[in-house]
Amino acid sequence: MKSIFCVVAAGIMAGSLSFSESAAAADSCAGVDQTLTKQRKNDYAALIAKSLQGKVKPAKVEVDAFLQSGTWTVIYASTPIADPGYFFFDNSSGASVFVDVWGGIADDGDKPVLIKWARRLGANKEISSCFAHVVMAD
Image (tube, rainbow, N blue to C red):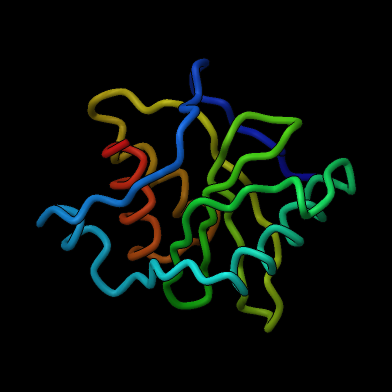
């Protein structure tokens, strides 16, 4: 089974994630859908709860951000049993399948490491770059 958390550092952010509207964000997240609808919140809360093997009910999952490019989706969410994290889902089979989750605080210069980590999961360049940018901007 894939790891539930790849914690890079202690002290996970406690607040909600905000996506920067800067020019850098526009470049790093060009073509990435960031629209978080109520339906997407509900759908991914259920998928995250399922990925935690039923230890959390979907109503207890707080979905704060949505990134989607091609068949890949990254959800920033918090649960009562773990620090907030970026949950990666692949939809290439026609259904959203949980792949892994990243949690932690990135240090200056970690963007290439984050991109490489996401690419190793199979995530496309666009979602990997946007994910890394969002982590670094926070």
